[in-house]
Image 1 (cartoon, rainbow, N blue to C red):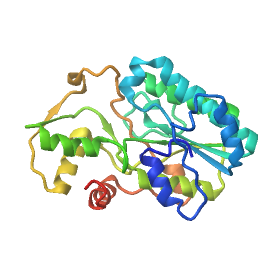
Image 2: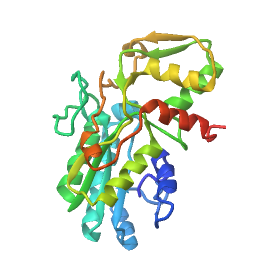
Image 3: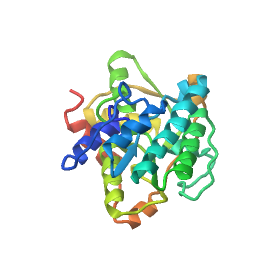
Image 4: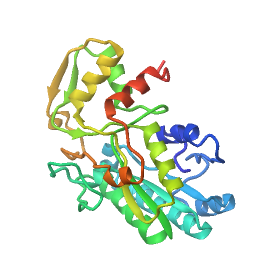
Length: 275
């Protein structure tokens, strides 16, 4: 697996505990270098889960060349390694490949039209996967949180300690996804033997960032004033889609259902990993 140091990597380590799993690290396996292909080939993997990416949306907007180097060219390297070893490649993608203008959950067959460099580079990674690997799966997800990296959940908890009020965005809607649930979905799809298909795998239900923050504070018993704001007030370099909810119907049809986002969030907050 690439991106083994991230939230999904940690979740994969526990989810695949009974399997032989190698968690690649950027410090030793730089996917932007051709040498990475030979590194993967030496392992002769059956499956490569490609989660390594440049995921800082604003940094991607400011450094588009680097974003495409990592998210497109790096993905092509991984896909070449998968092709040469005959491995199934699972490419972890994002809801940000969509423009957010739809008013109902996005389907896998809906046209992509990303509004920022991050989404554009991840869409390019999807195409590199399809064009290069013989056997592949694309798994799109959204608003991922989990152990091992700063995310919206950890940010809200930190802001609640350090800021007099929380200013949270009210005009962006999506689905929080627990990394453990995403890892379980990926394991299910691998075991199901499907390939050359795109699946959506995000938490069921949706919310704004305001509602997300309210639920986090409620679950940890913290009272804090939340001031709803418009996204444009943050003056971020990159735009975000206004609505990026994903529909998980094809995943459900394979026999796996993602949890509702609130119960999954509660499990994470009660797990003790944030202490």
